[in-house]
Image 1 (cartoon, one colour):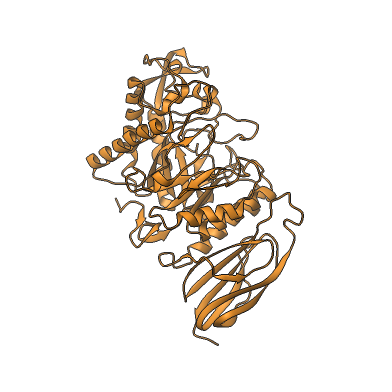
Image 2 (cartoon, rainbow, N blue to C red; image 1 turned 45 degrees about the horizontal axis):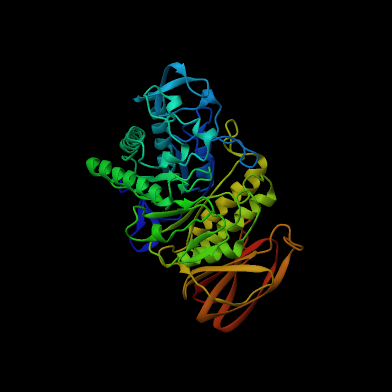
Length: 492
């Protein structure tokens, strides 16, 4: 096996994969590519590779329900299509009407499908975040879980759903450990995987019970499972990255990250789902409410920049600010948030709800918009000297009105100035053409400059520019966003 995906040895905010720098950037299906047998992941992966997507997440057990603001997806399979790692044996029926599971028997069909997915994604060079467990959110979703005592024949004791993310129930925790061990044993021979212990871990669930686990207890459970991952990998002679986050507080909602960034955390990659009251380094940021169509671009930028000096990579692992809006307006919001995240040294993933069983490459509309745009972003960012590049705060002295800026570059060599309309969707004038000038300083010498369109993936003609102080440069009228690239050159 080649060396697994790792943090870049010369830039701790970046990854290295098969000898090359890598940024994680994608608009993915909703992580049910293996557990939903109706999903043709061969089509999905081929299209993802075409768009230069560098990551996909993969749930290995969790099954979700459709709701008013959480559309149907691959992670919400019809009951006959749900494929679990445990074998259904019956004869009694689970809560979904199918035979109960025997947690002591593995399902060969699940693992055969898992290996086909991992083998094909490896051929395409797409990283896979293998998500071992997840929050269960409520009784209706807990009712779908094979580990729910009512869904298996193994005699587990009854429990309240928030206790799933604790070690309170010895038999439940033993089966969780067996699941984690089995998944890691089956997947640790692949060089393109990393592990996440739990998707969206949370404490103080809003059920009105005083004994609901606090975030600290959830984190102890996560640490125990992360230790198990490390134990299994030591036995197998491998080591992969572990991503995750410290548990959030559910009521009132508060999502901190300082402990996750700390050296003693079991997580080497910090996964954050952008939401209001998300904090780092003691400061709280409003990153937009779930499915709200809130842009919050300045707050997103400031959060990523605040996290940049911390040693671990920041991955905005699931941005759902507007993903239920499968239209150019919602997709444009995510294009701008994706560019802003990457220009500030972070990584980015949003769900593309146009990807469904039977429609694994999206719709003609999503192909022209979100999917093409994410391909442009990946191609652009991987054209940079990523190891040397860093966010350059304060580079611009002047910029057009209504814009939020971020600059990623190599001082004296390459500057990528990202400008985006920072107005919220409902604000008067939002999305209308923007015009104006930039002012900045450059070290003396000659440079080439051109504008790049995140929407078309095309550069304007290049022009020469001489370095100096207080350079004033007009930018063409643009809608939504624009990139100015400035490259050191020998001169005309």
